[in-house]
Amino acid sequence: MKTHKKLRYERLIFVIVSILLLGFGISKIIAKPDPYKELKEVSEENKKAGEMINQFDEENEQQIRLFHYPQFESKEMNAKINEYVKALPKENGIALLDYESDELNQRYLSVVFHYQLMDAEKNVIKEEKQCISYDTEAKRDIKVTDVFRRDYYDMLREQFKKQANTTVKSLADITVTPHENTVKLYYKNAAIQLKYSDYQKYIKLAGKGENKKPLAIKRKLKIDPKKPMIALTFDDGPSVYTDEVMKVFEAHNATASFFMLGQNIQYYPDTVKHMVENGFEICNHSWDHKSIASDDQKFIRKEVFDTQDALYKLTGYEASYVRPPYGAWNETTEQVLEQNGLHVALWNVDSEDWRNRDKQITLSRAKEGTFDGAIILFHDLYPTTLEAVKELVPYLQNKGYQLVTISELFQYKGEKTGL
Ligand SMILES: [Zn+2]
Image (cartoon, rainbow, N blue to C red; front, side):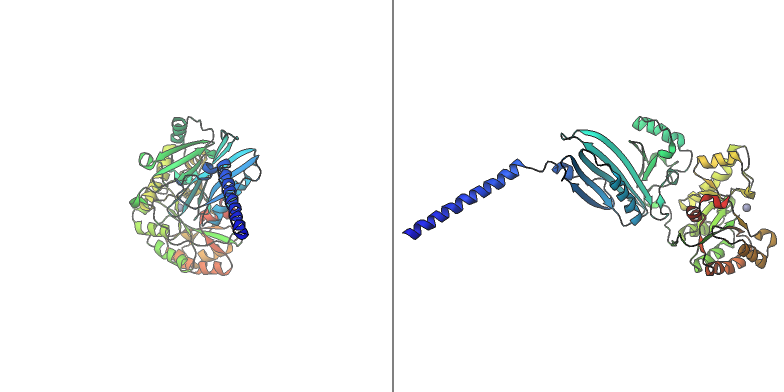
């Protein structure tokens, strides 16, 4: 009997303890729900690229930090994102970081951060938008001039006024993210959106639907910024020799830039397409080699923009650099170019191949002028130039030079090197 009683007693204790434990557990759940649950579960919408990282710091009750941000395959993009996240101030309140992300043409990455600081009642007391967009091929930030063709200044100002009631004081402070059918722009905390179908005239970089995608770039060379580099440049083409010139560079894992005349582009469409697809740089040398050192803005625009249009129609890309015929330009030229995101690119070594028409002279002039940051001028119009290039390319590489495009040279050596 005694044993039985003890058993019953033990069972009773077990039941009581169980009830207590259960009750404690339930009361804990009821009494302490996660106060930040909603803020932790951000929407998946508009997170079209990258892997989401969730970082919650709730230790210090004065400073709750609930951060969501993406990481990509691109190390450079991640470094930019991490730098932004790390630099966010530690402020009293609930700090929530959310974002939108996208990737276009497997090349252009964009993230728009939305940072909100809230008080204990979750009233927003501070808000900030930050846009980071990065071109993974050119390895630099995406600029407004990468996305828009020309004459977009007034249109952007007008749209910021209309869509966001914001007066844009400096176009340089506008940031941009390109998407499949739209372009989004940010200025301070204001944001606007332009549909490609409505602003086709202005936009060069957007998905534009399947058939209108710019040509895919199949060949991309790696550059070591620490090693010396040279840009070989060819003016006045394309011509019957241009394909052969490109073959030399392709055989040696090198590249070059072609400053083309608009009037020649129409005769060599496949050559120009090949150029773009194989990582050569397309550049602008006016329509028909008239001097653009003129005070007639309309004339300059026609000479330069007709060539831009010809390149764009063929490839989906435009030139970033203009080499004025005869190296001649003035303030008006510069004004027209700068206003439309174009830059003058001259040379610092002249092979004088057009004058000597001699392989050996062309070759020795180029060799003599060689230095780290050199921009050598040739014309892809002569068989003698082609023969000189066949020897020059391996010669320069054996000397340790990388042969890069003019944009790459400017990126690593500064724009002054060509002027
Ligand atoms: Zn020329």
